[in-house]
Length: 228
Image (cartoon, rainbow, N blue to C red; front, side, top):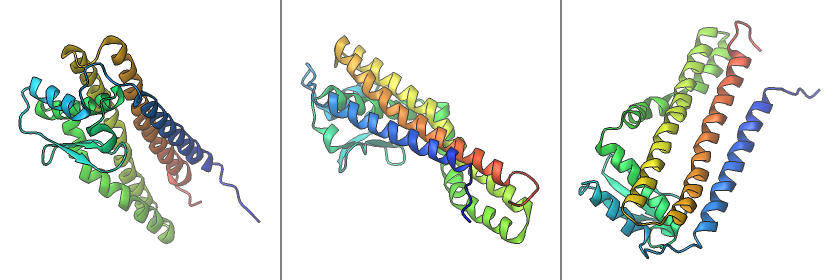
Protein backbone atom coordinates (compact mmCIF):
# COMPACT_ATOMS: atom_id res chain seq x y z
CA UNK A 1 0.00 0.00 0.00
CA UNK A 2 1.25 3.48 -0.79
CA UNK A 3 1.27 6.06 1.99
CA UNK A 4 0.92 9.74 1.19
CA UNK A 5 2.64 12.06 3.65
CA UNK A 6 0.63 15.29 3.56
CA UNK A 7 3.59 17.27 4.94
CA UNK A 8 5.32 16.83 1.57
CA UNK A 9 3.02 19.62 0.42
CA UNK A 10 5.15 22.01 2.51
CA UNK A 11 8.30 20.85 0.72
CA UNK A 12 6.56 21.14 -2.65
CA UNK A 13 5.49 24.70 -1.91
CA UNK A 14 9.09 25.59 -1.04
CA UNK A 15 10.39 24.04 -4.25
CA UNK A 16 7.80 25.86 -6.37
CA UNK A 17 8.61 29.20 -4.72
CA UNK A 18 12.32 28.69 -5.34
CA UNK A 19 11.78 27.75 -8.99
CA UNK A 20 9.55 30.77 -9.59
CA UNK A 21 12.06 33.14 -7.94
CA UNK A 22 14.96 31.67 -9.91
CA UNK A 23 13.05 32.02 -13.20
CA UNK A 24 12.12 35.62 -12.37
CA UNK A 25 15.66 36.73 -11.58
CA UNK A 26 17.04 35.14 -14.75
CA UNK A 27 14.28 36.62 -16.89
CA UNK A 28 14.62 40.10 -15.39
CA UNK A 29 18.41 40.08 -15.58
CA UNK A 30 18.35 38.93 -19.21
CA UNK A 31 15.79 41.61 -20.10
CA UNK A 32 17.78 44.50 -18.68
CA UNK A 33 21.09 43.08 -19.82
CA UNK A 34 20.01 44.37 -23.23
CA UNK A 35 19.66 47.95 -21.94
CA UNK A 36 22.99 49.77 -22.18
CA UNK A 37 23.65 52.47 -19.58
CA UNK A 38 24.11 56.02 -20.80
CA UNK A 39 27.29 56.39 -18.72
CA UNK A 40 28.99 53.66 -20.77
CA UNK A 41 30.57 52.22 -17.64
CA UNK A 42 31.04 48.50 -17.22
CA UNK A 43 30.04 46.61 -14.10
CA UNK A 44 33.67 46.52 -12.97
CA UNK A 45 34.15 50.26 -13.56
CA UNK A 46 30.95 51.11 -11.69
CA UNK A 47 32.05 48.91 -8.80
CA UNK A 48 35.43 50.61 -8.64
CA UNK A 49 33.80 54.05 -8.66
CA UNK A 50 31.45 53.12 -5.81
CA UNK A 51 34.21 51.59 -3.71
CA UNK A 52 36.47 54.63 -4.16
CA UNK A 53 33.61 57.03 -3.38
CA UNK A 54 33.15 55.22 -0.07
CA UNK A 55 36.84 55.31 0.79
CA UNK A 56 37.38 51.61 0.16
CA UNK A 57 40.77 50.97 -1.42
CA UNK A 58 41.65 47.53 -0.06
CA UNK A 59 39.01 45.55 -1.97
CA UNK A 60 40.08 44.01 -5.27
CA UNK A 61 37.67 43.44 -8.15
CA UNK A 62 37.98 40.10 -9.88
CA UNK A 63 36.32 38.37 -12.81
CA UNK A 64 34.87 34.91 -12.06
CA UNK A 65 33.32 32.32 -14.32
CA UNK A 66 29.64 31.46 -14.44
CA UNK A 67 26.43 33.44 -14.65
CA UNK A 68 25.07 35.36 -11.65
CA UNK A 69 27.89 33.95 -9.50
CA UNK A 70 28.69 37.44 -8.24
CA UNK A 71 29.62 37.76 -4.59
CA UNK A 72 31.70 39.71 -2.11
CA UNK A 73 34.15 37.68 -0.03
CA UNK A 74 34.92 39.43 3.27
CA UNK A 75 37.68 36.94 4.11
CA UNK A 76 40.06 38.20 1.44
CA UNK A 77 38.20 41.41 0.55
CA UNK A 78 37.49 40.54 -3.07
CA UNK A 79 34.55 41.67 -5.16
CA UNK A 80 33.92 38.80 -7.55
CA UNK A 81 31.93 39.67 -10.67
CA UNK A 82 30.68 37.07 -13.15
CA UNK A 83 31.39 37.21 -16.86
CA UNK A 84 28.01 38.78 -17.81
CA UNK A 85 28.56 41.52 -15.22
CA UNK A 86 32.26 42.36 -15.16
CA UNK A 87 32.63 43.76 -18.68
CA UNK A 88 29.01 44.56 -19.52
CA UNK A 89 27.70 48.13 -19.78
CA UNK A 90 24.08 47.14 -19.16
CA UNK A 91 21.98 48.57 -16.33
CA UNK A 92 21.50 45.00 -15.08
CA UNK A 93 25.25 44.37 -14.81
CA UNK A 94 25.90 47.72 -13.14
CA UNK A 95 23.10 47.04 -10.65
CA UNK A 96 24.47 43.64 -9.69
CA UNK A 97 28.01 45.01 -9.35
CA UNK A 98 26.71 47.85 -7.18
CA UNK A 99 24.84 45.37 -5.00
CA UNK A 100 28.06 43.51 -4.27
CA UNK A 101 29.67 46.85 -3.45
CA UNK A 102 26.85 47.26 -0.95
CA UNK A 103 28.17 44.21 0.87
CA UNK A 104 31.69 45.63 0.84
CA UNK A 105 30.38 48.86 2.35
CA UNK A 106 28.50 46.84 4.98
CA UNK A 107 31.73 45.07 5.84
CA UNK A 108 33.63 48.33 6.11
CA UNK A 109 31.00 49.83 8.41
CA UNK A 110 30.61 46.64 10.48
CA UNK A 111 26.91 46.43 9.62
CA UNK A 112 25.40 44.43 12.51
CA UNK A 113 23.24 41.97 10.53
CA UNK A 114 26.21 41.14 8.28
CA UNK A 115 28.43 40.56 11.31
CA UNK A 116 25.77 38.34 12.87
CA UNK A 117 25.33 36.37 9.65
CA UNK A 118 29.08 35.86 9.41
CA UNK A 119 29.14 34.48 12.95
CA UNK A 120 26.30 32.12 12.05
CA UNK A 121 28.04 30.60 9.01
CA UNK A 122 29.98 27.78 10.74
CA UNK A 123 27.11 27.02 13.12
CA UNK A 124 24.54 26.99 10.32
CA UNK A 125 26.71 24.81 8.08
CA UNK A 126 27.26 22.29 10.85
CA UNK A 127 23.62 22.35 11.92
CA UNK A 128 22.36 21.84 8.38
CA UNK A 129 24.60 18.83 7.81
CA UNK A 130 24.34 17.18 11.23
CA UNK A 131 20.63 17.75 11.89
CA UNK A 132 19.48 14.75 9.85
CA UNK A 133 22.03 12.50 11.55
CA UNK A 134 20.51 13.29 14.95
CA UNK A 135 16.95 12.98 13.66
CA UNK A 136 17.58 9.59 12.02
CA UNK A 137 19.53 8.35 15.05
CA UNK A 138 16.71 9.48 17.32
CA UNK A 139 14.17 7.59 15.22
CA UNK A 140 16.33 4.47 15.05
CA UNK A 141 16.98 4.33 18.80
CA UNK A 142 13.56 5.79 19.74
CA UNK A 143 15.23 8.68 21.57
CA UNK A 144 13.13 11.83 21.34
CA UNK A 145 15.90 14.09 22.77
CA UNK A 146 18.13 13.28 19.79
CA UNK A 147 15.32 14.19 17.41
CA UNK A 148 14.78 17.51 19.19
CA UNK A 149 18.51 18.26 19.02
CA UNK A 150 18.36 17.62 15.28
CA UNK A 151 15.42 19.98 14.86
CA UNK A 152 17.18 22.68 16.88
CA UNK A 153 20.32 22.28 14.76
CA UNK A 154 18.29 22.58 11.56
CA UNK A 155 16.65 25.72 12.96
CA UNK A 156 20.09 27.35 13.06
CA UNK A 157 20.34 26.94 9.29
CA UNK A 158 16.88 28.47 8.99
CA UNK A 159 17.95 31.38 11.17
CA UNK A 160 20.86 32.00 8.79
CA UNK A 161 18.42 32.23 5.88
CA UNK A 162 16.25 34.71 7.79
CA UNK A 163 19.18 36.92 8.83
CA UNK A 164 20.32 36.98 5.19
CA UNK A 165 17.19 38.91 4.17
CA UNK A 166 17.96 42.29 5.81
CA UNK A 167 21.58 41.96 4.67
CA UNK A 168 20.55 41.58 1.04
CA UNK A 169 17.84 44.25 1.15
CA UNK A 170 20.25 46.73 2.71
CA UNK A 171 22.95 45.98 0.13
CA UNK A 172 20.48 46.69 -2.68
CA UNK A 173 19.38 49.92 -1.02
CA UNK A 174 23.00 51.05 -0.73
CA UNK A 175 23.57 50.10 -4.36
CA UNK A 176 20.68 52.17 -5.73
CA UNK A 177 21.66 55.18 -3.58
CA UNK A 178 25.27 55.01 -4.71
CA UNK A 179 24.38 54.70 -8.40
CA UNK A 180 22.07 57.70 -8.16
CA UNK A 181 24.35 59.89 -6.05
CA UNK A 182 27.36 59.27 -8.28
CA UNK A 183 25.35 59.81 -11.46
CA UNK A 184 26.30 56.41 -12.83
CA UNK A 185 22.66 55.74 -13.75
CA UNK A 186 19.83 58.12 -14.53
CA UNK A 187 16.40 57.98 -12.91
CA UNK A 188 14.86 55.76 -15.58
CA UNK A 189 17.88 53.46 -15.49
CA UNK A 190 17.65 53.26 -11.71
CA UNK A 191 14.08 52.03 -12.13
CA UNK A 192 15.35 49.20 -14.32
CA UNK A 193 18.08 48.36 -11.81
CA UNK A 194 15.57 48.26 -8.95
CA UNK A 195 13.59 45.65 -10.86
CA UNK A 196 16.70 43.51 -11.30
CA UNK A 197 17.67 43.77 -7.63
CA UNK A 198 14.09 43.18 -6.47
CA UNK A 199 13.91 40.01 -8.54
CA UNK A 200 17.23 38.87 -7.07
CA UNK A 201 15.93 39.56 -3.56
CA UNK A 202 13.00 37.23 -4.22
CA UNK A 203 15.42 34.30 -4.44
CA UNK A 204 16.48 34.94 -0.85
CA UNK A 205 12.88 35.34 0.27
CA UNK A 206 11.98 32.07 -1.44
CA UNK A 207 14.99 30.35 0.12
CA UNK A 208 14.02 31.52 3.58
CA UNK A 209 10.40 30.48 3.02
CA UNK A 210 11.46 27.02 1.82
CA UNK A 211 13.70 26.57 4.88
CA UNK A 212 10.92 27.65 7.24
CA UNK A 213 8.48 25.25 5.59
CA UNK A 214 10.98 22.41 5.91
CA UNK A 215 11.47 23.23 9.59
CA UNK A 216 7.70 23.28 10.07
CA UNK A 217 7.50 19.85 8.44
CA UNK A 218 10.13 18.48 10.82
CA UNK A 219 8.27 19.87 13.80
CA UNK A 220 4.97 18.36 12.60
CA UNK A 221 6.55 14.96 11.95
CA UNK A 222 8.97 14.63 14.83
CA UNK A 223 8.37 17.47 17.27
CA UNK A 224 5.92 15.54 19.45
CA UNK A 225 6.63 12.82 21.94
CA UNK A 226 5.41 10.01 19.70
CA UNK A 227 7.38 8.28 16.96
CA UNK A 228 5.83 8.41 13.47
